[in-house]
Amino acid sequence: MKLKNFLLTAASFLTLFVFHGQQKKSIVIPNENLITENIAEIPRELANEVKKYSESRSASLAEIHPIKNDIIINTRFGSTSQLHHVSQSMGARTQVTFFDEPVSAASYEPVKGEYLIYSKDIGGNEFGQLFKLDLKTLQSTLLTDGGKSQNGGIIWRKDGKAFYYSSTKRNGGDRDIYYMDPNNPKSDKLILQVKGGGWGIQDISADNKKLLLGEYVSINESYIWVLDIETGKLTEVTDRNTKGISQSGASFSNIADEIWFITDKDNEFERLATMNLGTKKETYYTTNIPWNIENYSLSEDKKSIVFISDEAGLNKMYLMNAVNKSYKEVKNLPVGLISDDRFTKDKESVFFNQSTAQTASDVYQLNLKTGKIERWTESELGEMQQ
Image 1 (cartoon, one colour):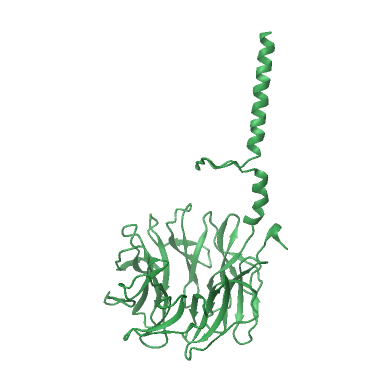
Image 2 (spheres, helix red, strand yellow):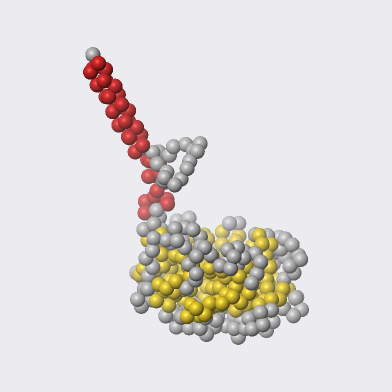
């Protein structure tokens, strides 16, 4: 009798164990380092259904070669985003970085384009470090301290001999400005010490003597400064005592002592504007577009501008003559979202990202002479494919 009871008890435990194992297999189990409380169990069947939306791919423009008509894109390979080289419209994507961690911003050496500078952190710790990538050997060299600091936002000298960047390595919080020759990382030096984590470089003057800096406080408050590199003198461009105004995206104009920038000063929407640095007179050019100007890009000679507006949640692209300030909308673009609009160095075309209701984000090229738009990448949508 005792043996019978024992066998029944053992069978009950075995059934419970099998049932529990099957139940575990039918739900998503969080990783061991994730603690969940009061969160409903997620059926694995549901997770498999939504996976097709998370596993689709997209491509974004990372950099344009300074001499050739080819680009570097950022697209997911496996579980992380990596850099790929594309040499022609709808050409093959040749992967150039291979890491477990995603690679973010990338920048060509601006004269010959023989190597890239890119940013990457480790394990998602957000301590982005700068690396030099030799495009012949695909070997990477760490340029920054490799510690618990954030580094990025590089701006090259016009001759390509060195770049300026921002970093929190002095104290982990304040984002100071540094100089480095990437062929000699020991040349790294602090050129401006600031207070606050919202500082970044926005442009460099044609003579390599001045930097335009942005100070970000909040989405509604930001300021512009000029740094004289030789003397270290920091000059206020926008009024630091005027609160609640967004002033960003500063670029040197082709006119001496003039800058371009985006601001919502004295207006409901953000407008494209210029400022004379001597008189502080501001002139606004997109008042007739009753929507925010999201971003803009100047051509190499500073005589042409491409800018993007956000009109009721959708983007439109405009081309402006920076000399006479006239502009017109780029027609025949699909309805969708547009970003990272940039001129090629020869000023003959504009590359940009676009996504629509039917397509993921992909890279396109607008020929400024013919008006023809070419698609450069076509990202896979997997099971979402129409």
